Image (cartoon, rainbow, N blue to C red):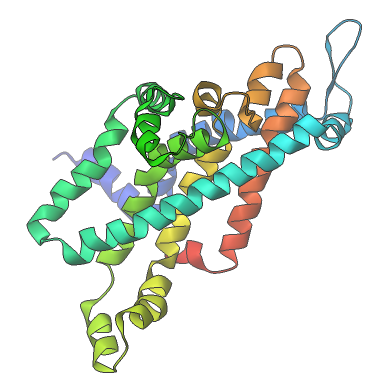
Length: 289
């Protein structure tokens, strides 16, 4: 090793702050310019207008786009519909993920756990569109698999629409809830469960008082994924939603003819997610993830 090389390495060793800055400069620059820059442009465009005669964007501050969004029946109904779908998908993912993750982490033999994790991850390897079109085939009224299965029971299949969107999105985002909950359960000490049993607590009380508080940060982490991904989705609604419209569909339909209004609609999910993160932050869950 030459003296120059040794001196160079000694300089970086003596200045860890400069070393860290050198490592983070490029990715942080990319984050600020591309990601935060695009969000800033989105927020700014949301306050512009389109001239009715020339169809050109007028760069003057106005709240007209947001007023239109919350005063036009079709638009504000889509807002509440999108939020309700995202919440319902998150709740269904949680209801399915908790017992499944608990079985994987605490009941299944240890040598089977990697296999089960691989099975949970397998759907993520398939194309998004392939999975959605597969559900379109299964949800098809009268001739779909679900309709065929329910017909002997005298029930109709869900078909295309609100329920079809919820079912499809729940399938798509379920792994994003299972994996954080599973990780949280693997960190749960056996000694705490044994102590609860020794003190006479039944399984239900142990689950409520020990398991749920311990995995709550993991549930919050999973809900951020399922809620945000459902909130911004529009392809699923377009394929299996029938006439149901979500916020993403409005953006898709208006960004060519009225870019500022599309930006205002696209801004709303970002604001909702920020408010959600602020709400869960007050619980301390984000610090424990």
